[in-house]
Image (cartoon, rainbow, N blue to C red):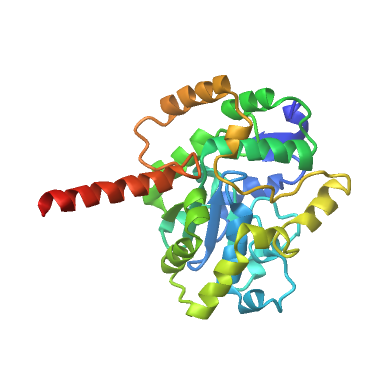
Length: 310
């Protein structure tokens, strides 16, 4: 990361992983043939990609739910721009499931016919930044400096996926071009069952109560962390060696940024966030208790109103 050009490749205004990207594929991406029943997970890096890969695998594949299948989730829901498994996407049976970190302007134009479906999952950017820091430092081993130095790179967009602000604003501001459902990482943490129901409704998938219970149970962070078909540990060993200290799935919590950021860093981040995201309508949850407190406040207000009426 200190040597951005060594690990990242800037192409079409976007930072790709230099070692993993197929430049020829990216150059011709606009013409990639989209099918009407394709489903894309879109995330900025470290915003719940692996979680959604597991969820879609559980929703779409009975053998994955029942534990009889042996395919990893990254094979069932492969990365679109990082096809390290050399999968022939054109020969995959429908419905095809994909994961991508791409910005809105880089995806195939066929996605703009509003038939194929996109699930965009976003996470509060402080936790995204902290998760990325640990991943680059302890898994990819490409960053050896301080958190302060990484924060500077993150806020300048000199990281994989480029600038977080541009990514989420770009997708949201151009949402009318796509058949897209926005979800938050935090709402999935706080109400996984409700989130699965929301995803199934958007995808037009109906699960029995028993299957729904199985999906929710197997998609918890705790279960995924020890599931070799979903936790990416094998991929880490293959790609980065056996000396890696970290994991793709680290904590999966809300508000971990408070363990990393100083008061000064937090204030600096907040100023930039307020400037960049002024009048942006999507909701962000910064703390594990934040939404619960807001919900309790709403309940108290409703109770007060009822008492006033009666």
